[in-house]
Length: 631
Image 1 (cartoon, rainbow, N blue to C red):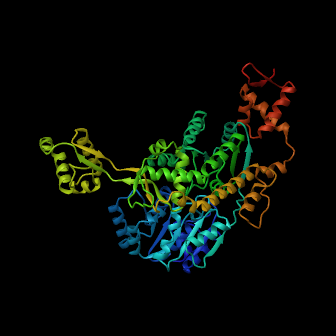
Image 2: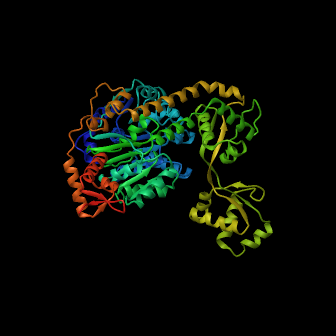
Image 3: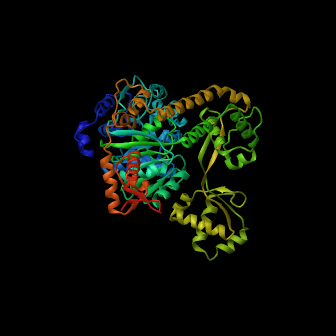
């Protein structure tokens, strides 16, 4: 089948968007490709179509579990076999997955960059016929990118494993420096660069300074009753704002990285199916969201960079209809943003202090480099050395990025048990308990030393041996613990540290100081760029954004707040006044704010009209501080 026939068969589309077809042909010609397509530009089709056209499996590197699962689900609905290997799969499930890839008809394998580092995963990949490697959100590979991840720097192992297979790197937003880094760190060979203009003719970028942010927000939500995303800075804010909007009569859900997977999925589905129109979220919500009719994206915070803003704002209007990306701010918003960025810029002294404390905490001598991995109780560590948690966390992330140590925030501790009773007590206990006796005997058969030490166990293994569910095994283990037969430590996630260099105190930090200071300077540049954008109300928003990405062809959009202010026509105040009178005739009284929410005009125009009507004895304020028509 041709590329167009594949598109028609599985997606029921009659044509490709520019430049999808050219990208697909370059991939089929076995060339490495870097593709810059704006959010909603159809990036996934650029690897899905050639992946289906060729024999073998297409490997897709993607940064988020939710994004991978969403892509897999969409492919499966179209009758295309795809699978994602995530941290939620056991080793046995991963083995089964690779068997299906090797002997079945699965065409797409989604992996996180972290999973890719597993030597076991690499060994299993070598057994497959790989037809294409796609790297999604490829900007994450560059420290100049807006979501830099050190794990992306290790994706180049795929080039070493599959030197003849094409690599397709995809991103929605990238400067020239980021494109250069993508080519360098993915080891691309004479890559073909495809770049679609960032111009979104249907998207109105608007920035408003307002002291009453929530009132302005309600004003917009009253007039645009379509799918909306509201971005806020913190997890706490998502719930607080969603609760506030629900109370005010604007049904919403919230989404953040701290929620359980089931909670995220429920909120996501309610919004996707439009049971609610409004999603309040941190920037954890967004990547891969396949909803083309989002009418409004509102930022109540200032994004960390222009790139972040373009990507998040670009989730509006993907159906080509006029949509709005609105940023609301005031002096407090600016202050909080600058404070947040300043906190993320770790000083050299802070690095030295945390590194020194870590060595003391784990009792590592000078000149030593321990091979084992250490479990880190971050709150306890910070308490002991009088450190603030967030700056310490940021410091550990920097030490990880610079290769001083490995800092794992979701390290899995295996479940373990220890018998706390004597053999005689155990014999009496298990005598009349059939299920528990079977479990006890199986543990004793396969795990030695369980009377002497906490011993790692595998609940999945025990479940297979006893032909029970894993949940039932866990329930029985908890019964044994409750009856004081065992101590049971269930598998959980913790932070873990592994040192990669010999302890040399200040020398270690001095070696990375130049890189850290460079990174801080880069953060400051990005901070200044987004603040310039927010405060510049004399140049078309579209031109400002395109200038940042060094696009050569640009013109005024005509629909941003700057353009609208510059081409304001004469306001028909008589029409506005008549609307106010009719509104008050239908309902006897309204506050000024209520009228602003109700009427389809600008706030300043409505307030000016109210003033005129009061001065001309047509309206009056009553005892309830509401406006009413004068008799």
